[in-house]
Image (cartoon, rainbow, N blue to C red; front, side):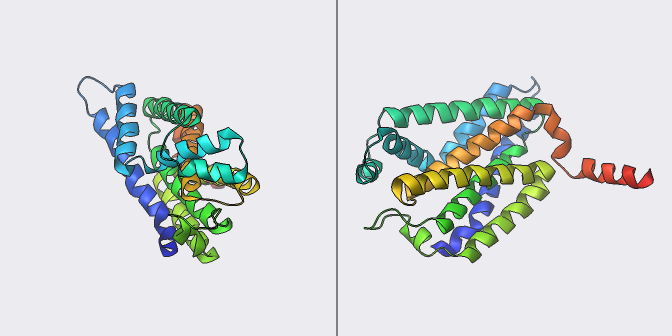
Amino acid sequence: MAASLPWFPCVGLVLGAGLYGVTLLAALSPWGVWTGGAAFLVVAGGVILTRGLHLDGLADAADALGSLAPRERMLEIMKDSRVGTFGVLALVLTLGAKWVAVARLVESGTAVCIVAAYVASRAAQAELATVLPYARAEGGTARGFVGGARGGHRLAAWIFALAIAGVACGPAGIGALVGGWSVARLLGRRFRKVLGGVTGDLLGATSEIVETVVLLACAAAGRHLAPYTDWTSIANAIGGGLSA
């Protein structure tokens, strides 16, 4: 199972490109682009395509970490199929943040950053799967990914991620990966300190958090980010400098 880790960013590419395509189709509307509606379709599409797998992990992780219980109790809470208050709040806030961010990206013409967000979030899973131990002594659904993960899997995942994000989103894509990596490392430190490692739920939560943070960061830049979503502006700047 760990051998699939390098391909996680490629899965992010497929998902992100498909959802970016939704925004392109929305732009063809003869009545103009309804940014809120397009954003809803993107967010809902992401939930449907992943079957809410990582959102489930986010909810379980929020319930566990929000409980402030001892380590063993937190691990028990994550196994519980019921969703508590912290889980519901995490889902509502995350989906709301994604909707606001994507609407802003569509409005500012930088919706291609959706691809970078999905690639970064999947690369973040490969990152934590290879640098953290598995938190459950008895094993679990993600044990195969974490237990067999090696440094080569991590390196290959980031090479794929850099290539994909750089080609699809230019310098902005590279920046998104750096930001996603930073968020993943911060989360990883927290997971190791509180739970002693990572679980499948925590990997899913990491994916959702990184994806949301990257979307919000790109959305905050708005139209200022547009020149950096391809390499044209950089090439022009270098060409202008050489001419001068």
